Image (cartoon, rainbow, N blue to C red; front, side, top):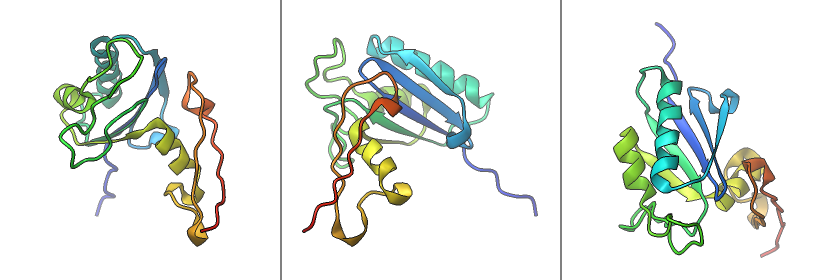
Length: 157
């Protein structure tokens, strides 16, 4: 029996100055593409081109987006994937979810860039620390996800 192929996925770090996009079956080893954050339509059109070029005609199965905010991350809320009051010109009230689904037609999961970085830094990349301790991310803006400064504070309950 042939081995099952991994799904094609895309990962987007949507920063206020730069979007970083990775696509493929193995995101950890994929090429990352950085583009400047301009208007929502221009930026997301470039994101879609990068993703479609990376797929070489294959379907995109799912996408994860870590975005600047404020961003509605409650999947039960009708505003899920919508950017709130932000100083970033043209982005306030923009519906990332609807626009990306229209461009790429796949399921999308959203979180804030800060939450996503904290999750990635926690042991195993899955959130809370063992023993009831918590993560507390602290960040400053930057031009790449690696510029996010994370402090893992071990707090006693």
